[in-house]
Image (cartoon, rainbow, N blue to C red; front, side, top):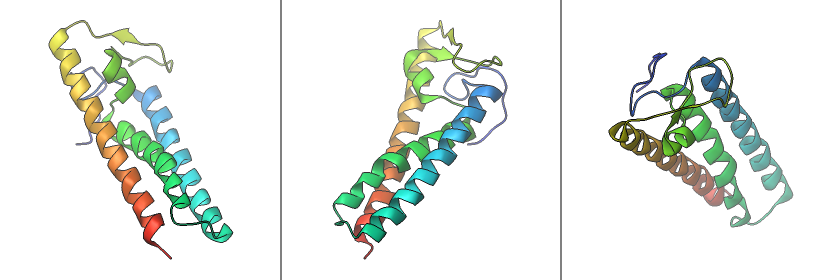
Length: 129
């Protein structure tokens, strides 16, 4: 559910433009590492089991892209933080307990979906000859 909110909405949006830009960059870096590593592993002729290592960079790519698309940082959501300022990493605290619960749910959703994407990539690498 992509959106362009630039204000805190519990369980929906907890980061602004600067943080979104960083998450998008992380997604692209993770994707490039995944692709390069997959090619290198295939060319090196490593076993299918060794190719399961692609789970890690593929998960990083997915988490970066999902956080950017949803304007929501999973780490901030787990910690009860938010940032809409121009400086990456400078956070404010979410005071309301119910808002923190909503944020934790969204964070766990992002983490779960990212791990699922990583598992799909790892399985594809495992089962391709």
